[in-house]
Image (spheres, rainbow, N blue to C red):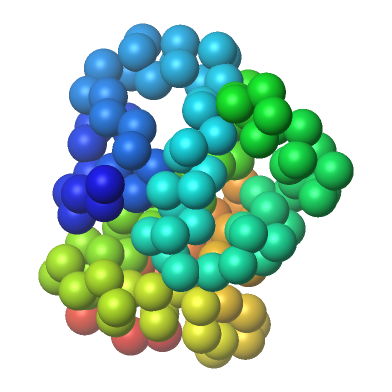
Length: 142
């Protein structure tokens, strides 16, 4: 299911493909399907509990979302945020998924010793991770 390219406003790692901003906004408002969470979890290779922590969803809520088969809009936005970071990390590593997984889950000095996924658990943190990826793409090592 993982496609190594970012599709417009969507996230290939989530299986959310949308090159139309209105379409992705609608999808977020309606709630991303639970399958997006599982696709992202498999793409990154981290335990369910860890990914739930990163997108700020407790275990009981995650269990409810699994039964309901979709997330609330705010949860969908957080899920999409992490999916886009995963996609950008894969791009940074020129499609090497294993290297991207490793980079996303290992401590990075430029992020205060946190992993990029941990640092991206807030919008400002995610912005900083994307900025760091941009610097690395341009050879500015931090």
